[in-house]
Length: 279
Length: 279
Image (cartoon, rainbow over all chains, first blue to last red; front, side, top):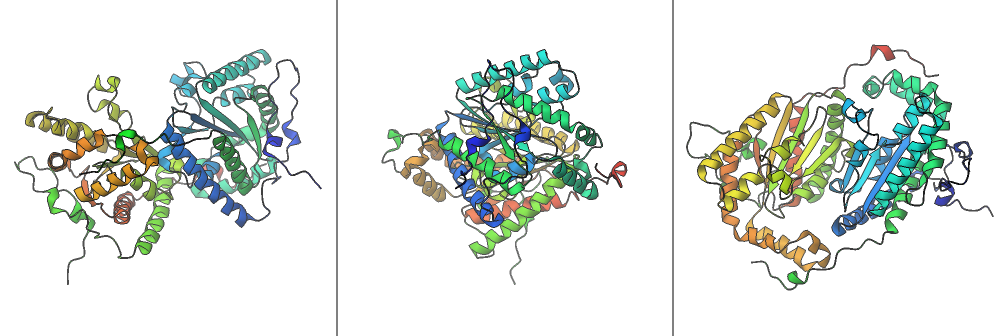
């Protein structure tokens, strides 16, 4: 009997300073795979809805307890579905409990600081669930592909990220990082659909096609970046994302497991409120 | 035949500098009224869901166009349902398109600035829909009830708010302000329910009961504040809110009408994308 896939099969191996070569290749993961689908879209959506309600309950406990912080980082090529994942996974979660932080191309003020500056000011506070829609990893990937970051500078930046994330983790932040993995063919289909619908042109810039031309360079940069920054305190997961339904279910399952592991409870009842009758 | 109620029947009359006495009294509005309910909870919820999807579409256009800004201000006594309104009205709206800003008791840094400082830094940018969960109106209401703001200081602060909101409006911000109006009896029921459920104690502080003791003073302060700050560019509406379903439907209807009036359209198609085939 074939082994059932497990979430951890999609976890990027933890960084090991002693090894020279990453033990992992993005190419080993099939973007079209649907290991966590039931086979029925309808059943998957029902499952997503159930997980959504569980996430809503866990988020309320997180907020009530006001101790832990949770950070979900979403990365992926254009059209890989970062926006769609957020919408689908958090549909049942109280919007009061979410903070979604999109990172665009850095502004002049942001560029005048170190690359972690704008990120640090947006990390979750106690009781918060924050989603980074793109992140500090852009500052690793883009300059690498543009040839602005040599191997040594790349390694240094990876080390800085590891230290930064370790510090966040040490101060009570649970970090989960997902790379939405689509194929080049799937991207073509999705970009073309945007071009063919005039109401979607606002989402699109001709320069997006330039990034597509660098597809292989980006895949390679992703591979190196993930291998150098997947750690016990901030693991990376590869999410096969050609199927939107599969992508949503898998990210939701991962987040559910992560929050479940925190054993979040409501704070103890207040003695001072015992038996109080409101007048 | 009785006149059908209209949304504008619940609008606080616009401020008129020439008049000494406000033309309006909160007491004239029945918190238990359900003028915009169909009579069936089920039908109201279905209606809310339909409006939610329309709001989602309008929010996407707002975002795509990146010109107008929309600010919804929610005020009301403890347990009046500000959180619940946000959750219900925006359930169908993409969380990526919302920014919810809760204002708590001011921090020392915030207190070291003028009362509009923390508010100004959080107003919506072009294309944004922002919800203020409490607002600068707290700085009018609380000090008034505590006796820290005399009549002259109150009037000055109201004038400052009018000028601030007029400036926001002039720079492209549509402002809608809703006062969730509950009865003192309904508040008792809701506070008691929180006290009786230990898992809800975290939402509760014994000092909340102090504010309840000042119920009449707060109603009076609300009445004066609304009368002095309801303007054509930033109108106040009184939302009968003892019924949660009614409250949600009415706020949703108001917001829908407000966004509809903006005639939001997707930006024109980009000529540069015409006929482009993705390789």
